[in-house]
Amino acid sequence: MRLVVAADDAGVGLKNEVRDLLATDERVTDVIDVGVAGPDDTRAYPVLGLAAAEKIAAGEADRGVLVCGTGIGVAIAANKVPGVRATVAHDSYSAERSVKSNDCQVITFGARVIGPELAKRIVTEWLGYTFDPASASAAKVAHITDYEQAGAGT
Ligand SMILES: O=C(CO)[C@H](O)COP(=O)(O)O
Image (tube, rainbow, N blue to C red; front, side):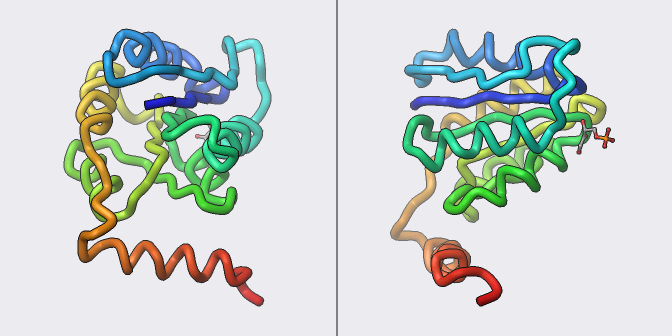
């Protein structure tokens, strides 16, 4: 699995911890870090959330882990990229359902909300979940995709 990671200055510490963990996971073949590299880079969360989501939309990454202060801003930004589904998930059950129910490719964390050990545990679990396209959830996700592809609001 190819992962993309990104964070703003509020999330960079947690992002780097998660990135380093992912690099040691045998299920992960590649980790693309689109930044920021450190807290001195003050580019705002939408820049990083969009950059990471575009890697997924372009087929360069399979999934992403994004971090900002709350996880909310990067999730909103990532969800603006067609075909990308992102959510904050600070608990194990939500992380599981984000994949199994919603086929989310992106999980986001708030570095001001969740501690690094819990975030890393959730990411480790999250890597093991897959979406079943034959499940009853598939038609529900397809409804969203169909709306998006038809041109939202048109
Ligand atoms: O959490 C954030 C966006 O959801 C970000 O890290 C901080 O945003 P701000 O409160 O607008 O500075």
